[in-house]
Structure formats: structure tokens, C-alpha cells
Amino acid sequence: MFRSITRAAILLNRSQIRRKTQFMDHTTIPAPFSGPPTIIIKSPYSVKVEPIDPVQFGDIKAVVGFLYLETETEEELSPNVKTAFQQDIQYDVRAVMSPSRDYMQVTCSEQRKFKYPPKDISVHFHVPVDYGIEIEVTGDASVDVKDLEGRLYEITTDQGTCRLKNLRGSRLSVETNGGDINCDSQLLFEFGILDAKKKGNISLKKLQGMKFCLDAEDGDIDVQATYLLRAELTSKGGHVKLGDIHGLTEVDVDSGDISVGSTSGKLKAVTKSGNINVNLSHHDDIKVKTNEGDINIKTLEESVSSALSVKSKSIEIDSNVNLVISEEDKGENFTVLTGQINPKDKEEEEQQQQTRTITVEAKLGSVKFEKNDWFSSLKLK
Image (cartoon, rainbow, N blue to C red; front, side, top):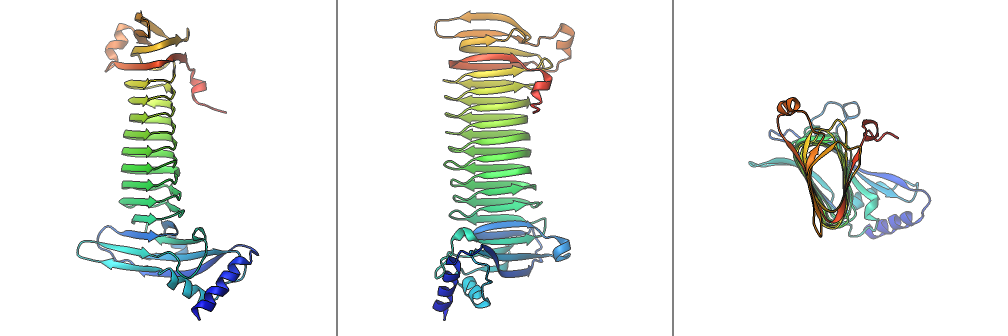
């Protein structure tokens, strides 16, 4: 009986008439947990988690789960095939209550009898908005999580993409073994770790909180805005592109380029062989260094007064930059220049609470300073 059901399902899947999302299972489990609620999911298939819609489900304290299968036929699979498929992947959702921890557990395995492409199988869960999550998927399976305000979030993918949207909590940890990490809205956490191995990229719109650590092994990092006390970004073979940064930001890459759109805090950017492009505005201390690449720094006329120290084979300073050179020593291999950018008079210096410094070093490359007007700094198209 099971063999004939499996054969019928495979024939349906090969007919290739039109793809259809098959609704395979619906599960609603009450979750009267006393402690911080969490859902733990281990799956070889893609996972989506979002808050319960009270209009759709009512005001319930429960987890609502759906199992979907996308097929290449318009014909609805029979109940027997759906039941056999759920049994084949050992799909199970249950509440676990123990003296140490209460949580909702979701498990499923790889197919044993059925042969559907894993990318066509997914599990979707609607949970109370205050749920934390622990998700682990394998293969090309992806993870989508949005609009939650829990405490702890831990996500692990293999080659699949992790897509996050509008999340809040205390700690966020995301690790991929080659997949991308994307967020087109805000991540608001006290602490966050985003780690993309191999050629996985990290692309984020806005980070807010105390501290975030981003590491892309050979991929790129692109963050449009950070409002953090501390940000640490590292990559071996990729580039790092930052937009509007606030707080202490440290960037360390091997062969990639570093670019910063605007600075409102401290910046330390180091690359071995890449180029560095930085736009200065209301910055604190700035330190940028490259061994083999070039450095280009654009400063606004309204930028704060800063002590400048430059060391490079070649130094070019735009005549429009408000710079007073105090010393310039041209050696055989490099030139050392010190001075003051946007110097203030004595009264303004006394009012300025601290002396900001800009330290620039390009051992084998060149350094260029340009003036950037306010309108151009907006990057309007």
C-alpha cells in the first residue's frame, strides 16, 4: 500500500503541469509556558516563523504550524499521500515541559521513501510575538524570521539564506556555512553575532543596540546604518561597505576594500591589500591603515577640528581642504605629515571638549584628502 502511494506521488511530481503549494498539515498546540517561551526547530527543510495574526487566528496562546509541499501538478494530493509523507519525514510538533526549561519542539527528518526536492518542502510557524527561537536547518534550506520581540534568537543554516526582518531581543546569533544573512529592516538587540562562512554575504539595513560582531569569511559585508556602542566587522576575502555609522566601529579585512559613508563616532579600519574610502563628518578619533592599497578621505567643511597624522608613499591634499600643516618629512620610502584639519581659533578650541585625531597610513599606496560639500554627502540621485 505504502509503495503504491509513493509511486503515485512521484508520478504526480513528474507531470510538470503547473507548480502548486500543497497544504500537508495544520497543527495548533497550546503553549501555557511559565518561563520565557521558545520554539526549537531542527529541520532539513526551509523554515518560516512569524507572529500570530489575531485577525486570522484570534487571541490564542499557542503555536500554529503548517507543513507545505510544492509540487509540479495542479492536482491535489490525496489525504493518504499527505499522511504517508508526514510519517516518512517523521514530522512532529510538541510542547516540552521540564524542571529546567519549557519549550515548543519541532523535528522532522529527511525523506526515506518519497523523493521530492528538499527545496520544495517547508514548515511555517505562527507564534506569540514574545517567543525566542532556536532554528537549525541543513543543506540548501533557508530560514525566514520576522516581527518578533523575544529574548534569545539562535539560527544556524548550512548553504541556505537567513532572512531577518524587524526583530527585537536581548541576544541574536546567526551562523551560516556558506549561505547569506539578509535584513531589509531593523535588528534591535543588546548583543548580536552574525557569522557567514565561505562566500556567504551579510547585507543589513539597520543595526541598533550595544554590540554587534559581523564576520564574513570570504563574502562581503554591507550595512546601511549602525547605532551601536560597539561594532566589530571582519572578513578575509570580502569587502566591507558601511553607510551611516555611530559609536565605536572596528573593521579588519585581509584583501578586501573598506568604505564608510559617514561617521559619528570612533573608527578603526585596517586592510592588508585593499583600498579605504571614508567620509568624515561629526567623527571622533579615526584610524585607517592599509599595507598595499590606497586611502581616500573626504571631509566636510563642517567637520570637527582634528589633529592629523599621515604616513604614505604619496600624499595628495585638495587645495579646498582646510588644513594647516605643522610638519612634513619626506623620506626615501614614504612621507610623514602632521597638521590640523579644520583648525579652530583659541576660543573654539577651549570650548571643544576633546582633541580628535585622524591617523592615516598607506605603506605602499597613496593617501588623498578631498573636500566634500554637504549636498554631495547626502548621496542623492
